[in-house]
Image (tube, rainbow, N blue to C red; front, top):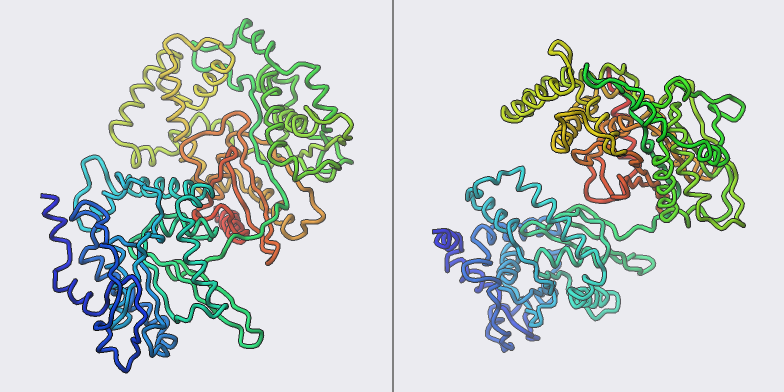
Length: 640
């Protein structure tokens, strides 16, 4: 039945006849096809090309009636766009058309011509030079695209949201694949060479056509765009997608210029960008628990207190960290703001020995990535550091600095002591009561009801009852999913046993649900604005100062904060990293790049070293600073 359906979608033979009446597929033809004797054009000799390939088992892989109509319309739109230019074409030899030897690309070119001109010739490339030779199996995306285009139902279990995710992921895979120059060169060098030779013939005078069409495939476009490093959307080109090159000649100087458009939007070739600044916004390292009591059955004991006391950073470690960077206030003349003090909370909420080692190792990783950028003659003013006023965040960024500039470095290279700034108002920690973590589920209750299924809610209610029983939390008190997750996270990291009745599977379920609750909470603009507007303002203002006066600011900056600081920052700037909470040491990095030619600035955001994107700018890893700025100001101007 499905085969019959696809047969029914093919064009009527009369439509194919109409296309063939206005154009012919030839290998080479140099007859006089001028307007004066165009009626006799098809009676002249030509070399018969090899038979076109089907491009799939018939009727699959064929251009449909819908495809022909769409390409004809595209031809009409091109005619409208370039009407004045096309009106000067009085000889059809001024138009060059080339296609791969796949039947659907030939039909597509003929359909375009039907929208442009009444008679034309199509030069087929017997070596199929316009088609990438990398054979990608269409698999599920291709099947779903065809189903959607012709109104067929998706298979059971697949909906439009999943279809969109499949398309996004497959597009990412395609661009990653063709973005590898070795693969792209091996699969499409002939196609690039053909088009390059054709375009370079224009200033040389060997190419005399006024209009040319090259009909190919989706992966041909992806390969070509990646080969030329064109800044096109990172998508798989839809049916009929067009990459247009407009060639201009300066009337005075005679120089030639190229303007490139993808689907009518102007695109540029690879920019000449230089890195100006790196801002690293990170979470502190591994720490001892903050919340030590959960219900009546999980209470602080002398044994557990002694255990955690044995895990905190050693005096020897702290001494090295203090030699690396000195903690100050807003400037060197002011004393640091540190609260709560380590003594008042010992041994809880403190950076561990493991945390120092982990953050030092992360510093070495950052040096691998940005060491060349910093160079060998580093001065104190080259590095700006701001920390939350909590001891564990201060010691964490000192550890990062130790790893970046001291650990494993050539001892002959002199490294200065850096400054860790602290503010009396701790802008890097979201400003809300600790009680919020006990009541997140109540605060976002409307989202719980509207966004989670009845089955999901039932599963969490069942888990809640079990945890209340295991931990001794009475029914008249809210169950703090965050407190449970935090306690279990610390215990797992240091091999301290879970409470009786709690296992690894329960820990994972709690983590997934608490992650969802946190994201719902901090993605509420009104809540996030009230809690973290000062933090966003600090980051935005600092990056703005880099752009406005890059020569007088540091090259590298660290902002040492907390897990909810990162979640709030991501929510405020609308950066999607998926359903995850920042683990110890997680870093959001903002690279600031400047275009050497235009002096425009771009932000490249990374999450744990992987490129992520701001909302509204998914197609290019380098986001214009103006777009980042608009998102920051949109958040900062939210009315409470």
